[in-house]
Length: 182
Image 1 (cartoon, helix red, strand yellow):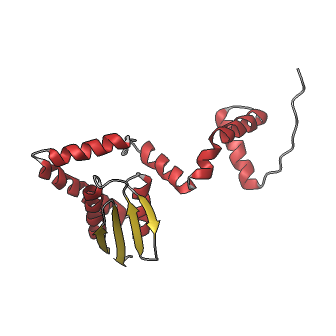
Image 2 (image 1 turned 90 degrees about the vertical axis):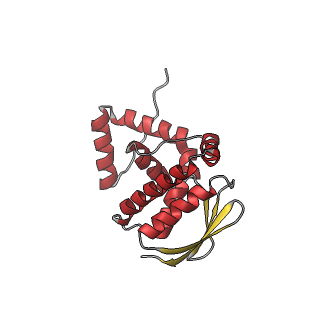
Image 3 (image 1 turned 180 degrees about the vertical axis):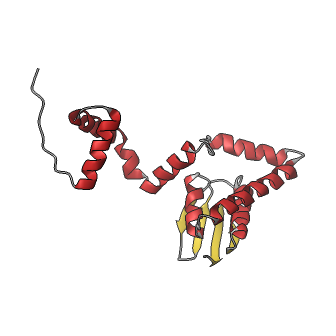
């Protein structure tokens, strides 16, 4: 068996503190920690290259709290299509409005701005966000099915937080103009 390659790594204090904590928490040698870290990065590097760090952290935060789920887009559209055909659909929309108002209350205490809320909802894959100017955003939905759901969500959250926005509908897009933010 060939002798393993040896390397020397220089670390600043903060990096070394993280390294030491991980080594101690995992109960493995320094060499094993470096090998595992490199394997992990190699396996998942496309994730780090293709997605903003904030999105990864937002996903982790949302899922780990147990308040969100991952749902296939086809199922999502199926549920919304079913709601629209249901005789008691107004009950759903009223309950959705209440959930949105509760979200507004949560967000209000965190002092979120309009753009942050839009980015957070984009992370939920409700739409693709395009910032067209300092106060204008285009939300590309990919389908007109979720338009009512998303528009209501935005209207209720922004109103509940005291923001003034104008939301216009296109076929599979929503255009948001911020009139007053924080």
